[in-house]
Amino acid sequence: MLVTLIGRVRFWRFIESLIHIVMVGVLLVAVALVYTDRSTTVYELALVSSFAILLASWYLVGMTIRKDLAQAMNQIEYKTRQEFDSLYERSPIAYLTIDMKGNVLRANPASAHTFSDTLTDIISRNFFDFIDIERVENNDSILRGKVAAGLTVTDLELPVTTIKGEARWVLVNVFATRHPDERLISVTDVTDQRAVDTAKSEFVALATHQLRTPIAAIRWNVELLMRSMRESKTEKQDRYLVKINRNVLRMLNLINDFLSVSQLEMGTYTAERESVNFAEYLGGIMEEFEEKVTTKQLAVSLVIEPENFNVAIDRRLFHIISSNLLSNAVKYTPEGGTVNVSARANGGTLYYSVADTGIGIPKSEQENLFKKFFRASNAQQKVTEGTGLGLFVVKQSVEILGGTLTLESEENKGTTFHVELPNIVK
Ligand code: ADP
Image (cartoon, rainbow, N blue to C red; front, side, top):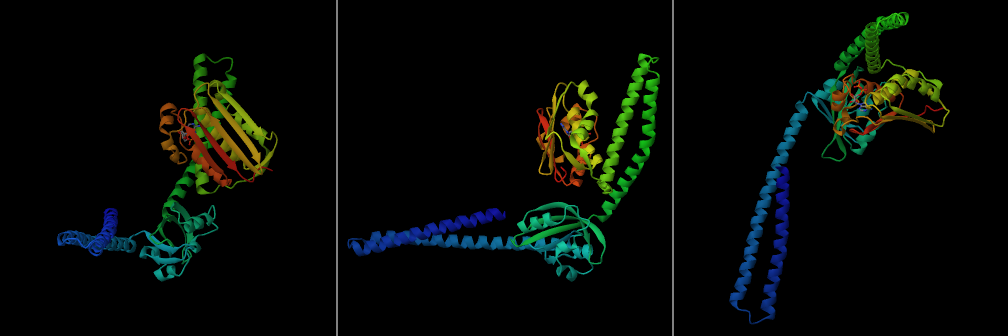
């Protein structure tokens, strides 16, 4: 509606200017006729004047319409402003208006509830001072940069300390406003939600940890049974034992996934770096997949550049990263396909990638890939086994190591995951 009105006002302004020019032109012609050509008749002068009068009246009508439109526009703007102000004041969500340096210019009553008792306390503050720098994962400079650049920030979870000294977690969104030097911030308190999530993660961690011991015992005993019955077992017994073994392994993998997720989510995982020879270490991880690679007749290549270098790495985290990426490449590549693994050390950074010629990931679903329990539609159809937790854990592990994880993928062509880990090559 507003856009249409603005369009109409612009149109009338254009018409007005046009009429202006034509009118002046016509009047000049009339004057020129009178002074230069004495034979000009009264009839001709009347014709020119009436044309000028017609244009003038058209001009006046246009001006009135334009004035009406501008008035209507002002009214709409006023109403919108009123609605916005009322939303701002009454919303249960905390809203703060800040300048580009983070100084709070205005705040709504809900923000008093989140950060302190009174609004005046907040207005004299800088928003960034509320952020608890010690608990924030990637420090607050990215947020500061985005605010200063006028970029939108969506659903950023931040630890804050209120004016009363309480530690809370908030979900922050930053929007541009009509004023180029101001930003609007919405703040939702998610402290309770996080506490519930932590309690859930703690329970899962405890339960899976307790389950691991009896399952490991079952696995060990099945292997013993298989070995002791090697000569005597019938074909049927062998089939049963193989099935039990496979399912115990699946259960163990699931439990390990759950355990990693809960530990990473709780933030209780502390990375411990130790120096390892990268080629040897990666070779060991790749051996875990030999059986599946052989069964599916996949061509696997490994390129390490340079051949020999050491990395200071948390063994478990890197195992999570590489084994999940490799296991997915093997799982989602049909028989006879290719898996190429490459690792390159350059200036302290390790560039690690796993590429396959598998089923790929539909473009429209790629943005959800690192979310917990997400499985792409084609994977669900073609490979029934999977939890959708692997990539979530990979992403968290890469982030704990200060790195980045990206992917390139095309459906039915293949997928490449790129991991970049800075400051680990020694
Ligand atoms: P899952 O247990 O389902 O393999 P992941 O978290 O490891 O869970 O992966 C999430 C989803 O990402 C998979 O279900 C699949 O849709 C997609 N995916 C991951 N790796 C690949 C790959 N190499 N090729 C095709 N799809 C993949």
